[in-house]
Image (cartoon, rainbow, N blue to C red; front, top):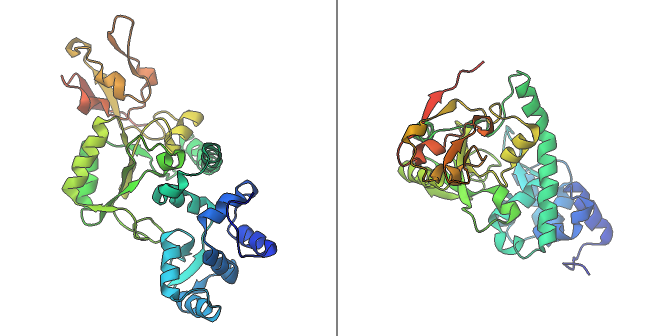
Length: 328
């Protein structure tokens, strides 16, 4: 039984799904993610970009909406439409299922969470496979010494995060973590992705995210750090990731890119004689580098450490120090 009764003919529905690059196994859920009038706009546009003026005129001509302006901007907010970057005037193109699914999970979780668990898991596995097929070759190239720019490429200390925030203090937003959202891990902190400026087709430019001040951002980063989330990214923004469902972290583990990606600029200097065996480091370490033996004594395995640095500021006795890592 279909999840949604569509007004589109079967032929037009199939064509619209092809244009939006919907995988066949997700045909039904695509009809929940994209509204009837949005499919009509997708059919109207095809793969050719349209200027804002042209698209408004065509929507009005085909009686698809009382207000073309409202429909277009809603489709942009929902990641059904994208802006054409570097066009001479505002120009639109249709988006795709890959990104629409991510936005659906992040910002329309009240609907996404009603999907059957097996479907949520299937979507997550599909997204993970595509993500890794795109970025794993880049990580391997970086491991081979090539100069490759990749997102989430460096682990950051709290002080390094502060410097990045101070350099971009005016347009900071917190957004839901797309990895946790797609896995529907709503028992974890979700609003943890930190964006520092807006760009076309980004979440903030689409009108999404919660604006915060620089001081609020610094406070939030410390809360995330203390809860075991790792700061990694670059100048334009950074994520606060765990080791369980984060796409970059999962890919890095699969590829075996420890210390290369995410790059670690720091190594751990554990002063065992100062350790009181409280075990806080063992609870927040995402890689099992700090652990307790059967006598509840803390140990540190340097070969398991990825150099994320979150253990150091959370040690109550200051027994964990950071030393600059020598780079090749």
